[in-house]
Length: 457
Image (cartoon, rainbow, N blue to C red):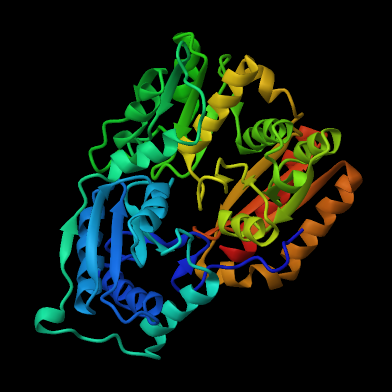
């Protein structure tokens, strides 16, 4: 299946902001122009001097891009307050708390250090919708409007926020009603944004914390650590006899867990654990959880068994959020560990998610392995095929690729499913198959990937 209506990357923005190799695809000039255009679009209805926050993760290019974006914002008369190194969800929370007009996060999330990106939040803490991103693209690429040039006293100022991390930690602590005394946990900070907050947050709630990969040097973010390289955490939890481990990505907006036996508890299971407990407390709004087309078949079986309805969206936490807002749901997310608790946050938050998982463990008295048994995971295989920009654009129209997908679907019948989609953030086509026979789905996935490599490289 090729998902209908899936957003292919825009001219600048993908499913999670603008992203690419820093100082090349994400150049200083582009960053400055995004700052100018964003200030125009987001503050066109205000008569006062616009105010914009800027946060960043630990990448070496963050300082450079922060300066460039700040220059762009100040040149059109916006005042800037820099937050320093912070998690992405902290930026989303603080823009509303501080009463700012917009916020920018400089991060490439789970990608290696040579990448960086620009995510923009509105004053209410939500990411920009497609329409506003397209307006920014039009100003920069089509020159449909010209950003103003301010002179003299109308040029923007730059200030530094001193209480960023403290304010964010206090907010997260307010989302739980228990302490975690006598709970032993490991926190893998991916040498990224969680390095500035995780230890203080979880230790202040009583947890015995083992902190790993929290020594960022600008180039080691996500380097063999964090949620995309969870093997070290699995080993660490078992060797140190811990109750659980939590691995964040570079900007700490996602989290994958490890149970006491070293088994990975992914986003699907995390949503299942939390949704089931929220339902028991009467806090699962409309008894519904929002997930994406990538969510394991076992999740829907779990929901059917437990009286929970599912809403399914395109891949991307922005689409999960849109569905939640439109229908008044309280939890949603992705298998990758982006989980949104809309009662507490406007975006995915890895540390918030870890707190909620620990809360369920504490309240139920169950080990994480016991909680994770709530759903059966069907075998699933994924192959990421690197393609050219032209190949990515041709993906939906290539008949040989379509035929390869149809043939795999015929062979699986009702015992599994095929999902082939372009990445919203990288030059990849993702081939995902799921079914009862692991060997069969691996073979079929490889056959589809081979056709894509031959046609779209």
